[in-house]
Length: 235
Image 1 (cartoon, one colour):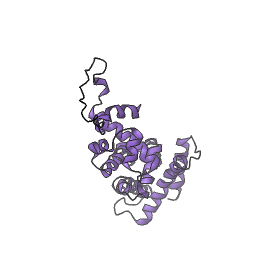
Image 2: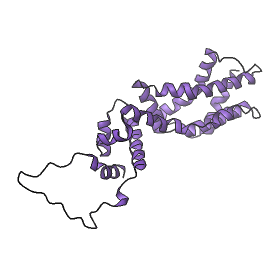
Image 3: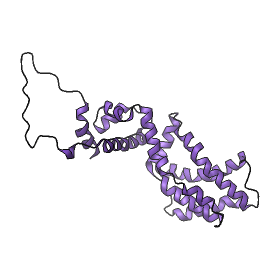
Image 4: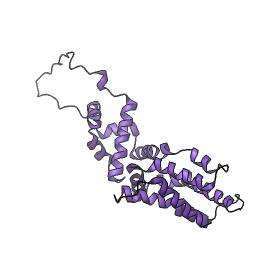
């Protein structure tokens, strides 16, 4: 159990017991084979850091980024100091959550697949969004993204500017070729809006599913194919 493992390992980081009464002399207890620390109960620092980060992802997805690290520490049964020992500041912890939830799911193959003109454009866009949804259709992803924006963190703006916009540009350049137009040149504001109309349709499905907790279709391939077909009809 996460809380037990962290608590057993993190108890050494909490305050030690108060001293004995005046005049009394405390004798060191003699350790036996059964009460000596077991190597198996001592977590490797990398394992402990990963477990704290896993707990932080759950915590922020549930309570948002206005929640305090003291609450996180209480939840997992360790001292707040232990969290800061591994992550330094709350902002550093938020950055690690960003890397875990967003960057580690990102695939460079998405942009490569969209640019493969040996395949029909509808097929490329459909395959991309099926793969993208496989990566992000998850409770933590959508909740962390919304909570981060509401709390004023820049992690979602960075994610969009550094990653999502690259894919949306790729989609619209391929749409230009699909229409018989040159792919070169800056993407226009209207083109961005059309690309976001497509992309946000899929994002709102995740909002309905993981925020509003409403039912959504289980037939993901058919849903993606229909949405992409409707998008391309505009061209």
